[in-house]
Amino acid sequence: MTNGLFIVATAILSVELFSIGLVSRFLEKRSTWIGFLKVCIPFVSSSIILILGLLLGTIMGGLFSATRHWYAATLLFMLSIKLFYDAKKLTQAKRSINPLDTKGLLLLAAFAGINTFFVGISFGLAKLSFPISFFGILVLFLGTISGFFWGIFAKRLFLKQFDWVAAFVFLVIALFLVFKF
Image 1 (spheres, rainbow, N blue to C red):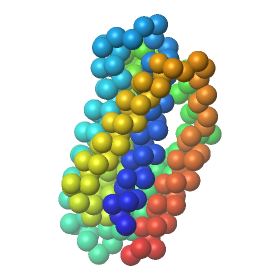
Image 2: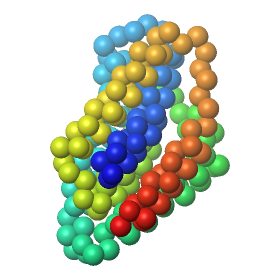
Image 3: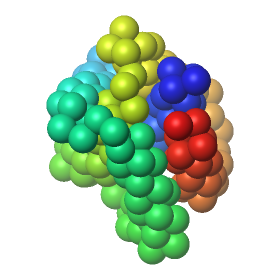
């Protein structure tokens, strides 16, 4: 069950990478390999942060193995509260960041990395097997690449508030972790 919840969590994280790729490609005047590689920066940083979070969560889980699922659920609950806050307060700030600018792209990658780190630690605490983590990285990659290529055909951007949905899903995952154990 933890493996399925992890795939759902990385699918939610990949939507943020999808939107970065979509907006970056939509705003470009022409498609270049440099633009494609710039869109891959948030994917690579999120993947590294996810693996580091999983490792840290696994190490921390060894310190308090009896209550590790409670800590995992608490971190996911905190992530959902953070996403509710982001949806309420930071939405306009995120929209004003230009993803074509390298600094703006790195800032958006940092925003995505914070959420990814929470998920990585939480599922490391929940004893996720490491082979499953590569499926999570694949989901992140597919989200990034599909956003980039979707931006080629987009005539207008329809970016809705996804933070509310993501916060609710992470809250449900936290409840599943609590009631599973």
